[in-house]
Image (tube, rainbow, N blue to C red):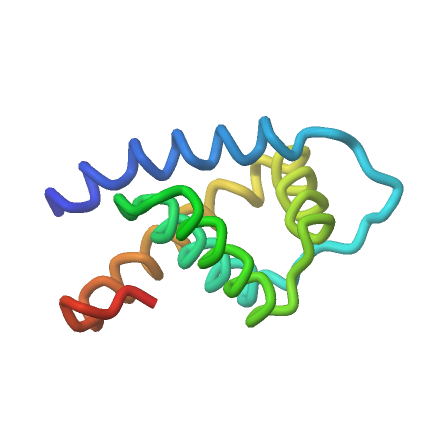
Length: 113
């Protein structure tokens, strides 16, 4: 329970940053499917939580996006959608948090993703 309390503020800060970063409106309304978004975004937050060089983080993010076949436009559209629909965003954040905890509990100390 203590891990959730410590991680949740980080999750909120990173989420706020990403929503702010991708807040430009777009004509495309395609969003990432919910289950895929939860898995992708949980791993994205784990990468952003890592204390490694920014270049390494950028490389990991690019690899993650390629692996999930997600473009920056897809991510922007999805974050904008959930930003415009907070009633859907709140449960998604909870699922993302749960998925992060699940990943961290199963991982080996030397393997993050």
